[in-house]
Image 1 (cartoon, rainbow, N blue to C red):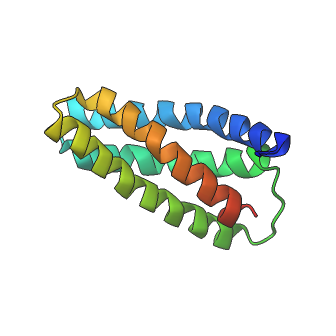
Image 2: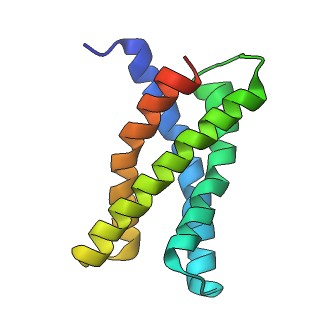
Length: 128
C-alpha cells in the first residue's frame, strides 16, 4: 500500500513538474520551431533547462529536504534527469517516428511514462 505521505509528495512533485514542463516545452518549441535546430537536440536542451528549476523546487517544497550536500545532491538529481532524458527521447522517437504521433503529443506521452521513473528515483535516491 502506498502511504499518504508518498502520495502527498507525488502530488507536490507533479505540481513542480508542471512548471518544469512549461520551461521544457517553451524552450523546446522555441529552439525547434523558431531557431530550427534538430528536434531531439531542442528537446534535450529544454528538458535539461527544466531540470535545474525542478531541482530547486523539488528540494525545497516537494521533498522539504535539508541535506547540506547540495552539490552532490544536485549532481545525483541531474544524473537521474539525464537518464530520464534518454528515456524521454527514446519514447518520443518510438511514438513520433514509429507510430507517427504528433511530436508534442509524443512528448506528453513520454513525459507521463518518464514521470514514474523520475519520481521513484528521486524519492528513493536523491531525497531519501
